[in-house]
Image (cartoon, rainbow, N blue to C red):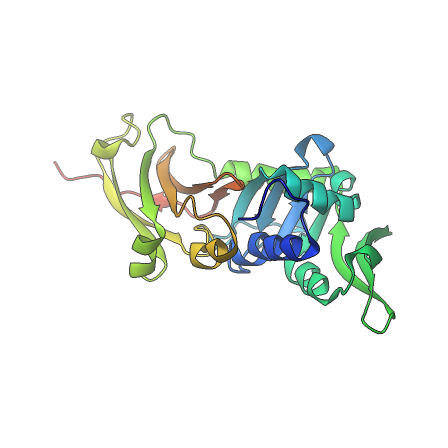
Amino acid sequence: MFNPDEPMSEKEFNTTSKAVFYQLFNRKLSFVVFTGDEKKYHQWLFTNVDYKTMLVYDAKPDYFYSLVTIRDKKYLDKFYTLFPILKTTPCLIQVVDFLSSLSKIEDMSTCQMKRMRSDIILSYSDKNNNVVEKLIGTVLEDIDVDMYYTLWESGLIKSNHPYSKIYTYSEINEIDGRAILLVNDSDGCDKDHDPRSTPVVAQFGNMIPHLAMFLKNMSKESQSFTICAGYDKDSVLVNAHYDTDFLSCVTTQPAQRWFIHKKKS
């Protein structure tokens, strides 16, 4: 990516932020939860579930949650130097509003992120030295953060023998953005169940990182990821894992469950 021994420039920071917030999930996971817990400052939970939906939550198969762990200390240091409030304030940030505002800032030293009641506001000076204030997020209660994380965790595979398969980006690209696994017990699913078999699908850009865009600006060391499938009682859950030196992510889709027909004897 960039030279790790040199301070991160504003251009490098903006390029990296665009890759993480916009390109990793192709804008489809349009919100990110910051915990406000300084011990978890490096963990950002991306989702397509907004705050109002969470307050009256109903389980839908098209809700996704991806816990992204940022491993690059230089980027984290720059990020929290610019936006220290995100390290200590639990909140839900709107990805598009945040990144579109960053792209308009001429001088990052003029920007400030602040809390105004229950709103997170980003202020900065435009090219005419006018102060612009942009609503980019909502302050959360700790119980709200816990709810987001509880839902992400509810989609994690808990069976003892999950089935997994490693895909390269080129393989996904060839099948038009979907990873299709033929899950069957002989390949490693939970032996407590009768032999069964079914195809399951993971969606590109939601569950699967959008690697073509992301890798344009990030390290090329890993263009593969792992899709896992495993039992939760009588249904099958699917998880996606992506791991590089810069970040890792584990994506779940808790309400999407696959029910597998028993094989005929």
